[in-house]
Length: 191
Image (cartoon, rainbow, N blue to C red; front, side):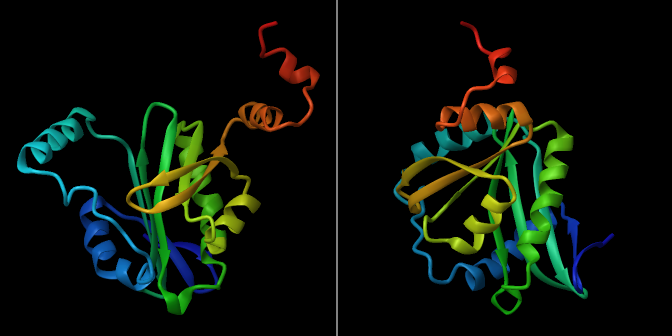
């Protein structure tokens, strides 16, 4: 079932077996200019086997795949997965070039946030190239905050953005970043 998003755009959740072929088919159109290093390429057979076992040990985390459609044509996605008992990683989002700049991602963010908050996630985080303003600006406007930087062999320099679904957790982050301590926060700290 397609849900309204913005304009003639709709979205729906996709099963992994629906999502993966679409992602493989369209990702190069969205990320053609990015330089990507395959972390598994230099691994030998033994390292790949051990890596596979570690992945199996993780069990089956919650995954969210959302397909975006214009009329009935697939034009984009967002995907991610549970990292632990508190956090969800928004791993990848893409809008095909002909549909970029139409406010699709901005319209989709609150929907994703509500879905993940309702699942019980306390944090929603993502990693981006520092110059990727088409993603950074909408996320910052939606309430995400910069929480760290990373130097990744796969992607290079990345900025981490985190959305805190609990307002007290967000207030604590603001305090830790230099904002004033108030009476509400005082009740949560040990002195």
